Length: 448
Image 1 (cartoon, one colour):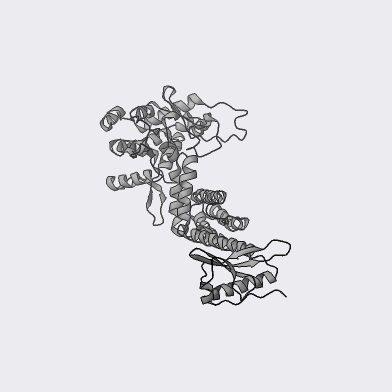
Image 2 (cartoon, helix red, strand yellow; image 1 turned 90 degrees about the horizontal axis):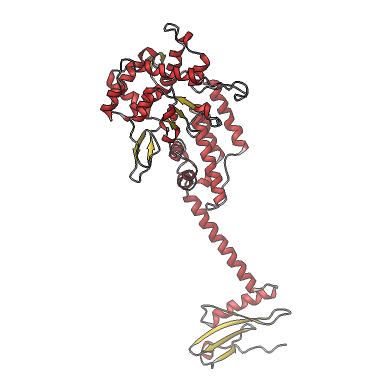
């Protein structure tokens, strides 16, 4: 039986000389005294290995040292390595700390803050007009789920929001859904917010698809409100009298029979002034797979060219009709609501005359005209008018081509005639009709 060390008292310990001394109470408990300091340690004897000393940090009294030494002795007697146990505890504590920090970060990281980061790092780099897509998400997604932690957004949340939005505005819902999905995928790629479950699963799609179908089935196709073509010259004259920059833009869209976004986003590099034509960019064109530039070409009347030539070219600005130039030099085009706001102002000032007598609202009142229908439907109605003889004068396919309606399923494999002369004639005579008895140069000179 090994010799038991004498059980030393605190007084005896204080009187010990420099060096290492067994203090008793627990086999393997020692005290090392060096100069003016001392430290208790426990000698761990491992099977098949050299003894190793475990130093107690922060323990000054022998009573505390004996308590901790007994714990270590019990651990060793059960075949455990104190250092391995310590390392495991440290790992667990670190993992717990990281998990808590991540959970706190996820809790504080709202969808809005995450989407703002996604906008700055991805959308701004990839899109030419990222602010338009950001504004859709801000207007339709943020109010309901913007302040919710991104990790807590569920399929039910997504379904509730999009099922309602698809019923009200399916095209907007599709665009919002696209960039919200992309944001979630970006989050998982970046790993900065932890492993977030994407709530756009097959179950979600099964839930929201009925809403998409219901939108198409239950909402009948309604024509947009347009101005009768007989009143188009009066509208053009009223637009020319206004100082609003958007009025010139509206007039240009009428003369070219183009859609809102195509007109608002027109850039100088899209224009061939010498040949009097405008190739609409794929970025702003409605049909994104229309790669053939001939199917995106608008032939310009002399009046349309005159309006373009009257627009000042601003250094660093690619847009022909910018809404404003930011202090940093960035050009901002007109937004989706520009034409509606203009028409509302005109109706207020002119006595509510810019209306469609054939389109009534829920209260039975004529609806306010829209830019899209006035620029396009009115043009088409004028081109097929019987009284004026236009129905016999203009080729129906040429009229459709003027509106960039190319329905050839073989993509022009057989009929490659773009009817350019007929289209040029139609666009010129449409402009002559819109601006009859109007000296365009006088108006442009006054507004320059």
